[in-house]
Image (cartoon, rainbow, N blue to C red; front, side):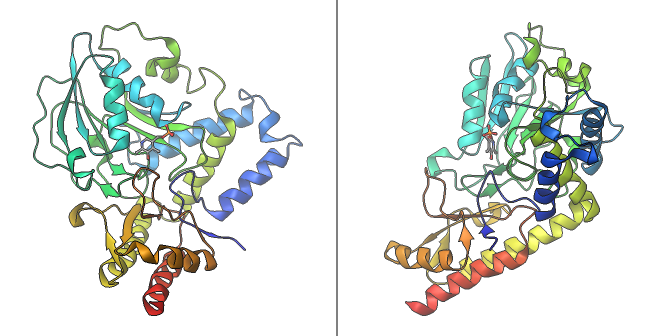
Length: 356
Ligand SMILES: *Cc1c(COP(=O)(O)O)cnc(C)c1O
């Protein structure tokens, strides 16, 4: 039986995407060849890459607005350094908001390139909230933030107004909610949270911000090179990109981001309502910053752990333990998760309440 998979990443994808991806591995478009054994420069794969890039921009409402979409390798973690390489001027500076482990990872890499100003941090409170009062220096080359903190279960619901280019790591909430994406100059997202399998990263970049640093950038790390080569500078991750493309198609066929956002809101509301109602549980993040993608919570009394774990496992739930650095529980409720699975988790929490 298929599990209710709350894993944070790699994570759940629509069942029909799994099926179509599996089919393509066996026989890609009736060609008698596997997706995995054809040239990435074949007509069929070039078309996939082109359509995937077009569709990503279309879903975000960025078509014809000076943006390019790339599917590159190295994970979101490589963008931690590719961003400063491409955007931080020699002797320049960049501003970062420190809202979690991934944000801190991005900051650490940026420091190797130049003056990296942390405009605010919630680290001292174990990243339980999103700092809101901070100033972005007007002479910064860019401002970097993380829209959703996968590990701590917080999410940004407002973004600063600033004249400097805004860069955002949207790995765990891209395509989950409507935003004015044209307010961002560079967005990146590792596929394996809400879009596809591990192995590719979607990068959306406004072309006009590139080429201004005075740095010599190695080709493989240069966004411009990748744009010029239509995201085929080197062999792309064909399977991850094709599967991400299938998910984007699924998203479009199912009403796009606005419809998805309504479903995501309903799932998050259902789960947070139970966390707040059930006397055995408590949420771990600041109420107004609660993530609609990664719902983090604890048992008030750890003595119930064994019993709760038994209950949810028996219901076919998987992937619920929190990140190893924070413990507790984390229910990742990405786009592909049906509300019925969230309902099963709520029932598990209620079953525990009845049993103690
Ligand atoms: C998972 C994650 C990353 C790291 O992604 P990799 O693809 O493993 O490099 C970075 N940022 C956020 C917000 C994430 O959730």
